[in-house]
Image 1 (cartoon, one colour):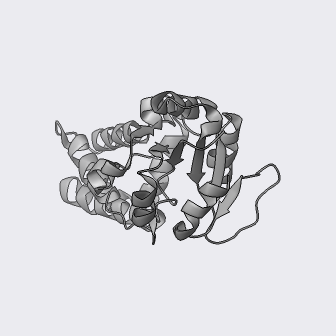
Image 2 (cartoon, one colour):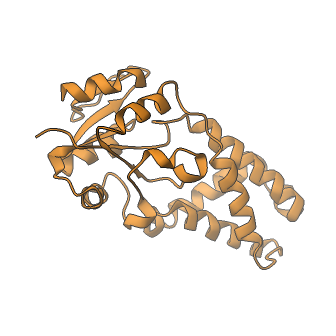
Amino acid sequence: MAIRCIAFDLDDTLWECHSVIARAEQWLYNALHTHCPAITQHYSYAALVADRNHFTQAHPELQYDLSTLRRNWLQQLLQTYGCAKEGLANELFHGFWLERNKVTLFPHVQTSLEALRPHYQLGVITNGNADVQHIGIGYLFNFTLNSAQAGVAKPDPSIFRQALTLADVAADEMVYVGDDPEKDIIGAHQAGLRSIWFNPQQTSADSGVNPDAVLTNFAELERLIQLL
């Protein structure tokens, strides 16, 4: 059947994410130094990031909700070092979140989305906590779905099926665009969607990763959609 809806991953698909998160983590470290210097006296920046990663791994039941994980970690950290002022964990998380949403779109992303929007429903399916409304591109999308809302994270097929319900389309009428071979490509296929692998570095795919198309530059996206 013809494509009626195009859904997108966000981090490392519409923008580069690693430096964004690193900058937000540094902001948080500096803020902790101001509000609870005992923490930064004990932890270097790298050690604090490692501590958060350890906390995340220790709570697999919350892997789908990165915001709650980080808030809970901050609350525990502040309590441990005697700095658990009411509301401080939420205040620090919000500051981190604002930094985390300062992104720069990859070339041709916005123009491609604007060109596609009159002809297709556009949506977001993400495991992260970026907010397209806050970033300023929310007007381009008919729906957004993150893993915290869905209660599961990619590659679980359920999150893709929930997106199909939001778009009111059949699985073979939606194509998913993402950078992660397992979470995005295999996950989409398990739910019956078609997929486009955003692969600007043109890396080799592992066995079992069979996207319907490969995208190296968003300027190619409209043409690839028409070929599906």
